[in-house]
Amino acid sequence: MNQLEKEISEKKNEISTDGYPMSIGEISSLYKENELDIHPEFQRFFRWNTLQKTKLIESLLLGIPIPSIFVSQRNDGVWDVVDGLQRLSTIFEFMGILKDENNEYLPASTLVKTDYLPSLINKKWEDEDPAVSFTQSQRLTFKREKLDLKIVKKESDDNVKYELFQRLNTLGSKLSDQEVRNCLLVMVNKEFYNWLKELSMNENFINALSLPDRMIEEQYNMELVLRFIIFKNINVSEIKTTQNLGDFITNKMIEFSESATFDKEKEKEIFETSFEFLNEKIGDKVFKRYNHDKSRFEGKFLLSAFESIAIGVGTNIEIVKNKTAQEFEAKLISLWGNSRFKAKTGSGVNVTSRVPVIIPLGIEHFSFS
Image (cartoon, rainbow, N blue to C red; front, top):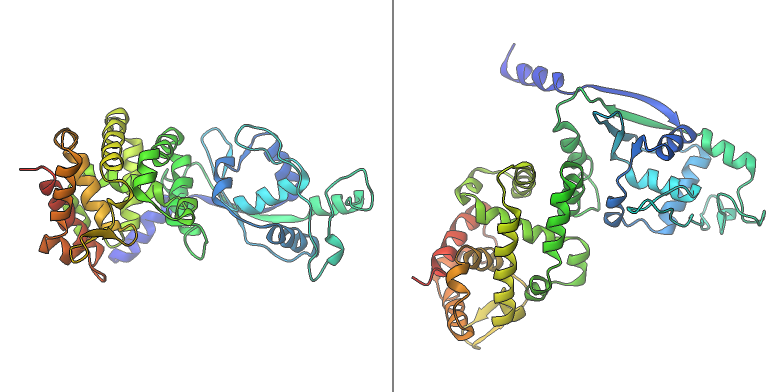
């Protein structure tokens, strides 16, 4: 057996799967009995409009095949939905059985007109007005439609469902990288997710970033919190060998969330103190490029500036917090005069060569030594 065959054999033994079709009625019963967890926390990350939802219902009514639903069996026997959350949520919402994070029923959806079935307009699952309600026959037919389920059994390696979720939701998906990470983190450690979410909405942090609303909606602020936490607590030379920084951040996020020694209270204090200082002393220009010719900060938020400045300040916060606004701004401006820093913050600089240089540079620079 050659090495590739050995690796394939070993990994296949770590994954135990099954699959079979189930009716919508059976699946909805599992959901109502709390035997199927679709993670209502994920709903905010998915943005289907009413027409998209209606087209899914239309497909089921017409017998048009839809992609398989992937679930992972937990130790308690409950099925975690790994891929297909939006499809199942759409079905349950239309049937009036979808619950939110607080276990409260959400309003049942109303359909709209489609090209194939224009009479779907204003239709509901069940209503006192027969003109807008599905008939009993239509409801029974719908519940008897089958969905293809792929099941990752509990005998599989613990990391399989996270890897599966990440792959299925990054190939051709409209979710941002951080939205996928957030879904993973909810499955791995919801408490850590809530902690991270709280930090990402810190007022001083948000003000200092000055990000467009679209980037906030896509959870980019949470990615920046992760970068701050991770890059401050690792040897950044590790990044030199990574082939994909996004995967590196995801893996470190899971590692930190599962660590018994990671001190969330200490990290929160450093984070809050750092961004309170940056926002109060410099404000929303802190992560923008400094134009020496015009003697001003200008342009938009720069990730490279964030990586160097935020982590440099966070690492040296006990020194930095005692500096005046004038002292810190002078130090900040001098960073933009550093030739090594400027060389690594220009366009076209590879991230694996940028980060291991600008982060140690920022840490040294803001030590004020």
